[in-house]
Image 1: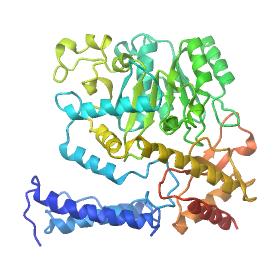
Image 2: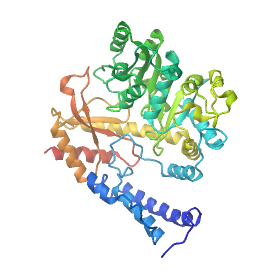
Image 3: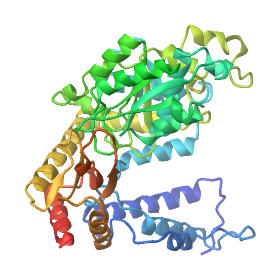
Image 4: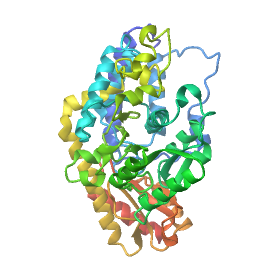
Length: 489
């Protein structure tokens, strides 16, 4: 039929929305049963053919309902099935379906959050969500505040901008021309967003100092101390150290407490990239692995990884809220009141105007899905989920050890496990992965390890599994290991 709904009205929204929820629910059921390919077997060219560039002179669809169904069908057919039990790949949550409904609420209301006047509820939701996280992680920061942002890359940049402003001669206003070469120290295995943040801030290659790791892929504290001394000898100005609470490559957790000792002694800002692993602190039996996290000056934690939120939703927490606000202090007369545009942030974190504390301006109500999910399911649900994910990693490591044809990179500290064909570091593992993906039941990823401090025989290509899918079971992992061994011949 031809529909005559007003595109700005509620009729089509109501009708199509009901049908959409049923379609998505059916897709979730099918994925949970493991039906179909976990990852569609599409080349880039084939994917683009599914979504051709719309013609600029195209008329409106004769049948809006059919056009809507067509768009949804194409999206489902080309999407990786994160809810399938065999999705054990990237560090992206298998999200709570109900949390996605809160994203729909946020998108429909579309309240930007640069200033409290525009996003009153969103601002309060964000503040409450951040305070819950700080308390749940056991930070004990009495003057802390922070911001929710779109992903760990923006989160790390936000924190390091605060570190630069706090440690330098007002680089935010005066620029870097008056500065000596600033230096930030980070492990070889840290997420690439840290090095990218250093370059965005104008520090270049010289400003991002890589620190070797030990055999467990954790930052070497003696190497860190040596690098700081050498940097000062070269007239650089060390300002910060980034510790990983769960490295992307293998889930290794740097010795945060020992690194904090170095930072305290050297007068450096300590930033903890806990995008993936910070939620381990919710578990009493896992907190020791994160000992010292409360000594950080800043911390990021992705809700869209181990805490099951739809992407993207990252928390940036600051021990001292004023330090976070100072990173972005500026006048904006069309937005912030002129009488407290700059000077007030020197004494107040101005938390109610979120635009003062983030790169983003028209920001989504990210706190709604966090606060709403906590309201519905409580902290215990998320504790149980994190605990189960770590247990799956333990199971997979045990299954790998039991296979003479396979070897582990290292014992898992959280929910990431890396393994490969024993004694084979290159193309054989890549070939096995291609065969696994072609089979369609499983989606592991790979990591190429080439870092200082790790024995040569342990470097090279590894299969990597990030276990955070509530539909993955011990039986799923046993079948995956069997499939890898079978593919190796």
